[in-house]
Image (cartoon, rainbow over all chains, first blue to last red; front, side):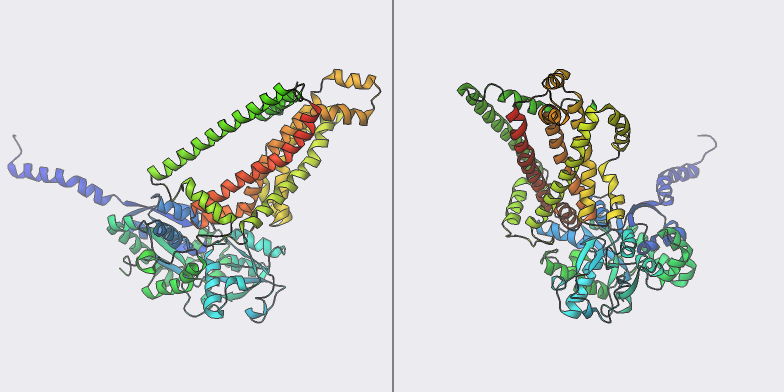
Length: 335
Length: 297
């Protein structure tokens, strides 16, 4: 004990006890994030990554990418506990929760945020130049959607029902499931007459003169205040057990929102890299999109009124499913 | 020769052929055949029953209903779909019969076209050395490409819909038919051919009376394998490139997280595939192998 007094001994002991906590605090928390890629709608994640937002909030975000039309795989992975957050198409989370509610279990997932309000475009072949949608509703058009369960089809169904008082089956269109990347070639070669999809497919079709933008929900063509087309979801057990980490993740996303809102033009090269599209295409597409990610009660309710209720009527969702709390959990925002 | 490796199908064909020989008219033969049928039926039922029980126990004991719906729930869904009386709303376009009919037509059309190409070519390659030397390397180079790998190219060539799916079925089913026919034609006992020639048989007669009947067990085996494969390819094609058919129901039910519907589609594929095989290949077998009493030597 020579050379060490009681004071030093106590200090050393305290340091030993505190060391693991200090080390743990310095170590970033891992969040497994599933994201549609390549896709413009999910670019907020790339912005968070590239602007250092995740690091600032002491997070190590491990990304898993899912292709367009494969949101179902992402939601399955979220449900199976292999992801903490998923960002992509929308209707899959309420569908999964609905199945669980039907079987008497609590809903395992929650929609926590949203992006890209009204990010649904109806692009028609150049051969079709109707003045209003009523001119073509009775024509046997072949319209592509990424799957028959696509959010854009659900959105369009909501539009028909709320704005036109029409069921989807009352119109003469045939909807064909085609991967987003195949829509423009299919339109160019006359295999389809149009498509319902988001960006960059819409801009690609316009730039390549494959078709023209006939309707765009974001500019109000499918009704006022369109709901978000991209949703961010998480597991309820994660939100409850690791609430602090979940909140930090959302804070990082809000930082990315700010970075995008400050200067969308500066983000163009970054978005181009994330989406694999040309800078010019992205710059044009940015006029039709808003990737900032947040969700208010009113927006969530609008999503439910516009898309959710038509899904209930179609039988996709159980009538027992309620938007709050079975689908949405907005406790992570605004922070 | 690779395609000649004995398979359960070839063994069955040989057994069926041997049973036909000499025993057709005897009471003992009939009784024996009945006994064997009964035995097969009982053993088959026990096998299927065991799988169903294991399935039910797994689903219930481990609470897997969401990812592995119990067989009773699947059976109820099948019943509802077939009687068009759905407990839950039908979300997959036309009714199940239209989907099944689309898939059936695609499978049978693709199979018929593949048969039309592969059997004559297999016979030629098997019997004519010069043709074999030209054609065989090409076929062997194309053979390793999986049928599903042709789908993107087929979409590019034919667009989405029937033609693409049928094309992929033809491509995938050509090979088992071709290899089996070629093996059958190549392995005919030369004594049979020489004997026919001694009796003055010319080319067409030789083909009709010796080569074709002698190759038929192999051809039937190829057809049996190809028809099963045709269903596999139809479903794969419909999942990727069609908005109708049982494959599209399968895909859509996944998007809806309805595992019961998904398994309903799988069971229906199995049942219709089996029935198609019995109908087409079974009938052909009865009218050829069993009637002519030919067997694999």
